[in-house]
Image 1 (cartoon, rainbow, N blue to C red):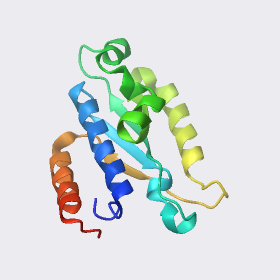
Image 2 (cartoon, rainbow, N blue to C red):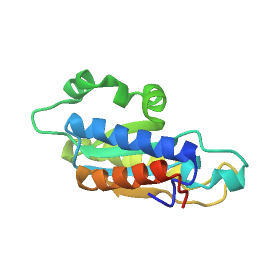
Image 3 (cartoon, one colour):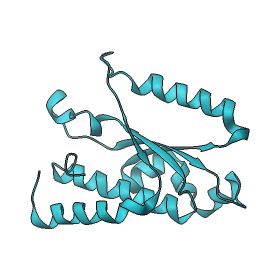
Length: 155
């Protein structure tokens, strides 16, 4: 958390990301993982002399029991629309589901995201971050971010 909360803009993006995760958890998406990428992870301030605009996030989640994509969409459709997730949470967010029925689609989507995120626009190699979707560490992350924001400390 401290590594990326180095400016007010980055803190705002991290706060939005934690809210995005909380909303995913609220509708039952708690098992899986997320891939994080974009200018937020690339030190864009140094590379392009500008702040990051958002965080790119792909959530790979297991479908909650007794739910369908339609019922989840009805609970909070804004989470599943990259335009609204960017407006609401500073997250360019996408969700894909894990499970035996989605295997071919999953491989296709993971290949797409890997090919898109493995290079910068200038074709230089880069990586992305994978984190667990489980909510158990989010409270600690929020505490750290709040402490940074309240103390004005930029690591």
